[in-house]
Image (tube, rainbow, N blue to C red; front, side):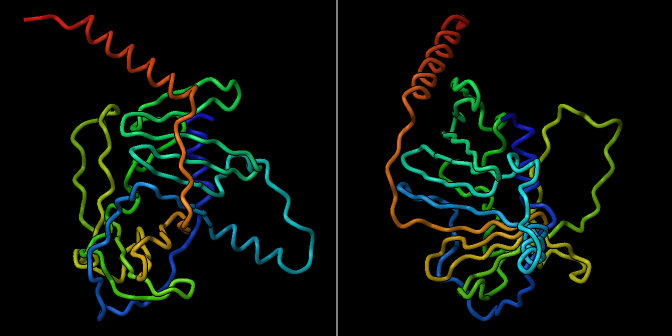
Amino acid sequence: MNKEVLMLALFATTCFAQQTNVQPDPTERPLKPFSNVIPSGSSWTVTTKSLAELNAKKENSGEGEAARPSASARLIVKRIDYAYAAGLRREIFHFGDGSSLTRYVTPNAVLFEDRVSGEPIIDEPSDSMSGPTYGTDRLGELKWVSDEFYLGVANYNGRPCFVYRNYDSQKVQPEPDGPPDLNQELGEPVATAKSELSNLQTARIKATAFIDKATMRPLALETMYGVQLYDWNPGFQPFSLPAKLAKAERDRAEAIAKRKQRYNIRQ
């Protein structure tokens, strides 16, 4: 599965979702700041939901035949099982057709076996053909969550949560001079706090994070594209990089070292 296909899969799974309308109570504040650092020996599952999926479920809940799997089911990521320990992160993507893809992420590489040939593939974390990565020992999708974006306390599926929210920026962006530079790296989207808005009535919500009060771990992340539901597993099962991938990583490191040595010209 190439990069474009997996990115399409992630988008299609979460398309057309809406944000939960909550009115958080701002009188209570967390005793300590939220941290997106993942402790070593952690495992968790993220399930993605879309408004289209939920509406279809309601429509099919009564009479009529059961919904048939779509032709694109093999592209749709339904769930991702994560595990992290000692600098290595495992991600198991489960697709709508029942298939899966397992990849391993380190600070320097993304490693997985080709789904057809079984050959090891190693990519750069910043540009992997298996799709975007969100960090190794961090919940990168929640790195914006801080006191600046705090709204208050509200219930999510019956559980009290600290609620954080960011918005689309309302600042006027300057027009670029000349034609766009296609080789220029795009900056990360700016997270805008409620206090920075010029007009709250016309503000567009980008993301709302619900952090469980009892555990200070994320329970849900709602964006303009979809909803991610987090389930933290109490029982961590140790894992390691498969032998085939470990050998490919060693061979790659040796090849890089030799290439550096070959072109190392002493002054």
